[in-house]
Amino acid sequence: MALPIFVVAVSAPVHAERIDAKKTTITVSAAASLVNVYTEIGKQFEKANPSIKVRFNFASSSSLVSQIQSGAPTDVFAAADLTSFDKLLTSGNVVKTPKVFARNSMQLVVKPGNPLGIASIADLNKASVVSLCAKTAPCGAYAATVLSRYGVVISESKITRGVDATATLNAVSTGDADAGIVYATDALSAKKSVATISIPAGKNVKAMYGIGVVRGSKNSKQAEAFISFVLSPAGQKVLNTLGFLEP
Amino acid sequence: MNKVGSRTPRFVRIGALLGVVFLALPIIGLFNRVAWSTLWTQLTDVATRDALRISLYASVCATVLALVLGLPLAWCLARLHFAGRRFVRALVLLPMVLPPVVGGVALLGAYGKSNGLLGGVLDTFFGVQLTYSLWGVIIAETFVALPFLVLSLEGGLRSIDTKFEEAAAVMGATDFTRFMRVTLPLLKPSLMAGLMLAWARALGEFGATITFAGNIQGRTQTAPLAVYTMLESNPEGAYALSFLLVAISVAVLVGLRDRWIGGAAQ
Image: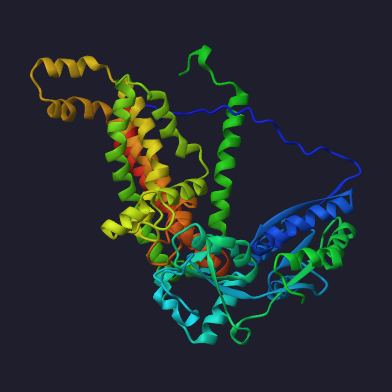
């Protein structure tokens, strides 16, 4: 008896990137919370620099650190915290200290209409499932700081861990998690799919976003150009529009 | 085997060898990263034990559920000519080709408490919430594993000569006896193959599970989710658990093969 074997013939047209001698492609590994803002900045940057093509790799900053440390070809790294850069400085994968290009904070999100009547972080134990980022991801560390400032302890058996900021928000916006602690910018982009409860500045965190060139980049000139663009008024305007604060 | 016409050309042998190397190298690479001295400590860690327990329990339940739903489905696909059969077969195949994450999103659309077609009803009238529960894990795993079982069984049922069953019927066997005494023994090889494939698929499930059932340690965090979650926080634990998953899979596959598949294939 042979195992049934199913052969699926796929005639996928190979999307070979057109090799354009004049175009340089740079790879930007960026924190998941930067998806919207960097996609927009990338478009504007390519328009302003027709000879450079930007390819993005979005994941949690901690995953990106592991990727870079294991040799993933990356030109620019943008993280949701500065600790990620410390790790890369220690391992020698970046040489210069990062430039801080934006600031973010955390907010509490609940189901639209707030059915459980959660007024603040202090009420989080009313929720049966709370969505938080993986402990190693910056958003997970920020959430832990906020919780400790409130003195709130949530049992691990009620916490679903998102692999990155986006997944953590999705658990509340499309999934069935009752509440989550996410970036203010992500809460903003979720629009009506969640209700947002702000965390006062005194108990909130200042999430600093850093950017830098990765050592071994073959396109460091173009990488620097991208970083300059992020820091330029044009880049900062996009960041502000999508809710990021000035560093 | 040794007939001149059926000799295996050299390029085929080289190709096969490359295939073996391609498959074996990552496994060797994985073993190479396992910290053997702390293996036991890592494997007896609470998070690891929880994940293993959930994985084994959920994957077995999912396989049973897939059998309960899959056998009648395969039967009808193999032996009945009904309108929409091609549609049903395409539907059965869909979870196989669908990215598992999309499967998870689709399951949320059906059984999610807040946005699902059926989830709200289940919650309001029965107080049942599938998301973020062990049942959610089982449902997600069944969804992706079912096609493997159905296709294997359908192939098996097609290859059975119906004259044996007809003979049994002529001799007065009831439907049930006929199924148990005639059809099932003939179907056994493809049933076992199908169960194995379905179980393996369920055990390895990641995307649909994390999307639909979440990633709650001790509740819905299966071994693959634990490996992924631990990869950064505790790589040694992640490699230890990966090693154990490989060992369990190999043990089960070898065990089943010798007992059922291998025997029948001779």
